[in-house]
Length: 189
Length: 315
Figure: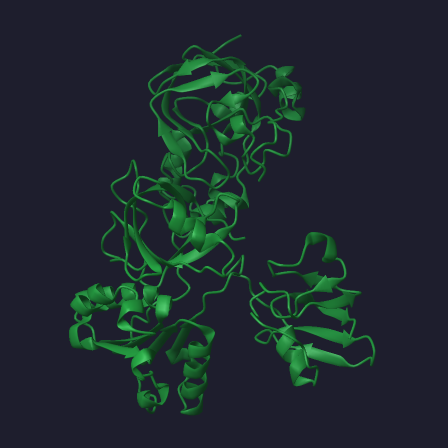
């Protein structure tokens, strides 16, 4: 970990996944979601801290977060990581051991999963290549998030397989601003 | 290094328990409860330069609101304890990992014999608290230079009563592991402290027939990854063509000595650099903290470093 490396983000719609998805029609529409929680961590492997409001900076990330500061585990590797989101519905599925891929239910609290925003009612897997709004902030879906073994090791819980294909969304910030839990989330375009 | 979540904790109390040992109490600035831990567990303390040091939790495992560490000032050490003593004062922020336990109590034991040498008493203090709270059968042997130099002495006296036996070398009394006698079913021995103490305990108990499964030892070693699993490999001696097999539980340094190589050494924990030797033709797993990266292509520390499958040594 280098505390001084400048963060390098791939613009969401320039990402290998986002650039393709942006040109392909489809995806759920007409939904209305909610921002439940905001978490950041100052550096790789540091515990997440819950925020009552967060300042999102376009092209950079959430102020104070490791991927804003360039101190994240994957900061040296350019990618779309300005903001990461995960569905509360995926966490609910883990908590009921659905599908039953592991020994039993897994309680993964919003402070544990290491994604920045926990959301409800937002079909994240449909938002690669799409623009959507969280409060006053506009995000662009760059690629699907993918679970990593590092998270499993950090948590000491077998979360890799259960999170597979529902690990959330990596986004770029098109328009920055302040977000707070309770903010509505809606599709643009 | 095996990953663990790091918390930014607040120092709420710093009290000298001996002239060299400070007892530090930490709390979480936002959460009333810290992660649960078992007696014998340790945490990593992160230093400002990114290095980490392992310290055993010595408080009450049942008290989730606090972590307690006792840290000895090592003036000749590598700087971690000096930084700790100078900077971790009440109100300071310390970067502390979630706990991990490599030195757990054996739950099915009917009697526990705890032996702590100096600052090595810290994990045993947590064990004693846990056992005392359950009315379990235990004895804590505390070995130190003198009462003044015995870490946590007043609280251990209050906790253990006559289950605490003190051995102060300044008064001529030394713990003798042969007094533990023959092994008995359900009796487990736990030792932590300087290697000369743990070695004599292990050697004596082995001689008197104690099964290894009933003797638990923790060393204070600066290994970066305590979960590293050593594997056997073969060392080829370049000058003679001889192969030396290094079993998983034997260091390369010890294997060389057994084959007649008079290797210099001192710390034998990858810190001092005394045992450095050259190698070629092999994948070496460097586990020391002393050899500069630039030298790792052809030099290694056989006290802690090993090889994948085989290595040729310049001996």
